[in-house]
Image 1 (cartoon, rainbow, N blue to C red):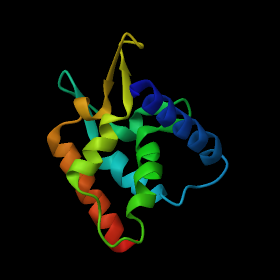
Image 2 (tube, one colour; image 1 turned 135 degrees about the horizontal axis):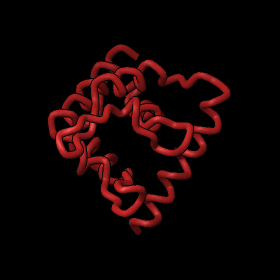
Image 3 (cartoon, rainbow, N blue to C red; image 1 turned 45 degrees about the horizontal axis):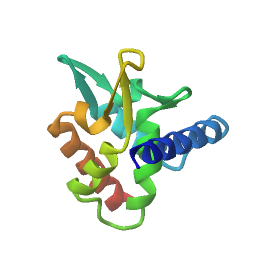
Image 4 (cartoon, rainbow, N blue to C red; image 1 turned 30 degrees about the vertical axis):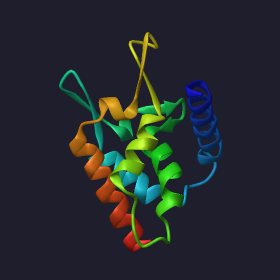
Length: 127
């Protein structure tokens, strides 16, 4: 089951990367906000999602915006923190050149998960 989820996420990320290189995403502003404010913490080092690759050619902030943007666009409300956490738990992050795989949720501080929820709330209200 986990392998299926991971493969599904990677397939989505590859699709977005191939399409995203040709045209601007409708969620570009959302990706910018996510990339600017949300990071992972690895041994005290902060790696912002704008600098983190989901797959070659696609930044993690873009992948999250493409995944979460449609869920909040036009809804006038964001997502619950538990819903965002569930998505983050399905996104694999490889460490040590692939020696270890953890979820994005596991390397993201709780404060950043809350910030991501707030960004989605703001985006939903303004979309």
